[in-house]
Length: 466
Image 1 (tube, one colour):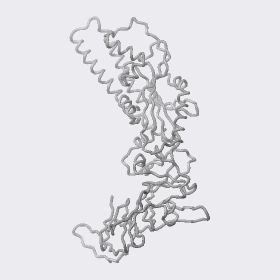
Image 2 (image 1 turned 135 degrees about the horizontal axis):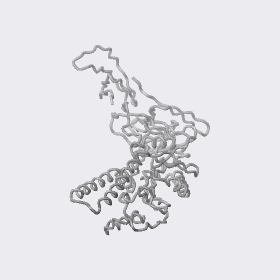
Image 3 (image 1 turned 180 degrees about the vertical axis):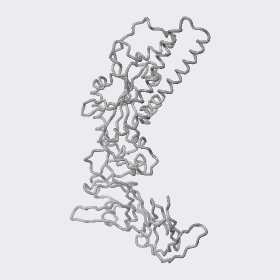
């Protein structure tokens, strides 16, 4: 049997120093259970990556039509298809001189009641750095390959060649070019059989083209709907990209039983994504018909290495005895983070904590405001074992309260309770035991061995196996 008891406090002249253990804690006089979760660092910094993907005429359909009409090459391609002017070999290609065209902007929905002004300021600063360095980006990506670009202190670096993302696009470009050549070779003397073959080849080319670029199209659609993602990167290239992002954000990712993948955890750090079209600065038609590059600029929440960590606890109020009455704390935060060194406090509501995975990641995309002045609060009264003058307290009518808290049972009764430990044998077996009586205090947090259960005067407590 293990019953976790009260904590902690050192009271100095005017300042309270709180010593919180990194384990589950029960404060008996207020009925507050503090279940330790993990160490947490606010992710107020911003880091970004830029993925460049070459774009050909036949990929115009994957971007929103409103943006597509801004790109002269796409606009001309559409008009030619509508007018049936497939043969433009005798026409001189017009040189298109244009600025970078914004395709889409997606922003993660916030669940916080108040904005994180530090994070917003850093995001605007990072966006400005990217924007002012766009000429350097354009020169860095003046290539027909998919690339991962990183901006560090105003310097553009080509970090990775995204081979598999590029291979998928190359397959499309090759098929389109081969199809065009075959049409020209057999344009004059085509017979019925060849006509059927070409129709079949055209259908196959269109199908392959759609399959090879569908992951980019779907990714853009979701970004437009503010469903931020990294699916525009081929899944074979993702491990290298994720490894680089993980290093940049300075956030620890623990191996837990969580069902979420590392890919999903990384997605949860996305704050904003921008998609831009950068035209090719060449007079001649480029190899493979490349008309420019799509830039996928992704902004992630990142932690500062020097940031002070906070110990996070999930708070669960249970009834407690106050004289002759049963009472219970009300309006308690769902999760708190406390830095015992700086005496700073972070509070999450249940809704605000939904975007966090505290057991898997050391930071969240959003962090509520850090409170430096919380001396006149109910929470500090509890942590310093003071009289509860600032707490909202409600009356509790039930004489017996039992609730599961993680792998433990929270018990609250009016008086002490007598219990006996019961061994749970396999079916059809008998067990001879020494059944000693146990006494549970009115307020307790109990862990029961897996092979036993507790039979008490007014209730039964099984072991928790999951």
